[in-house]
Amino acid sequence: MTYEEYLDEVTTLIFEKYNLKDSVAIKLVMDAQNAEFFVRHDDDKKLRSIDQAHKDAKTIYEAYAARSQRK
View 1 (tube, rainbow, N blue to C red):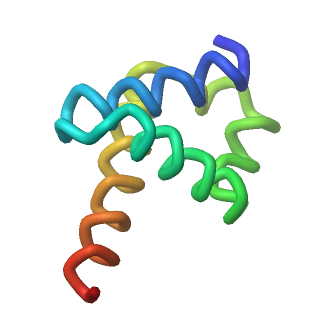
View 2: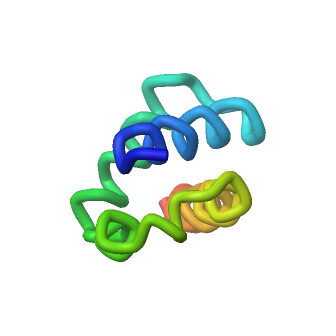
View 3: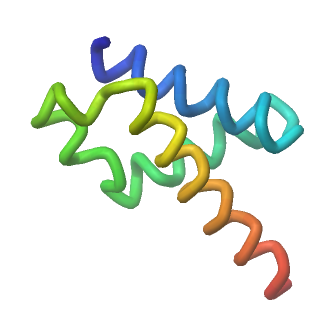
């Protein structure tokens, strides 16, 4: 899948698996992208798989949950 499709997939997984609003899922992926979380994915097509998307969605969500608990 393309890089953009991959980001869409991760966003959708965060929305569906963690019951967040679509706007929150989009913001989480955008924040991760701004923090250069996806740089390797842009360079290496092998990292843009469904299995990796599930792993990345979990990692991004857990970071969000950890930040939310500190507030």
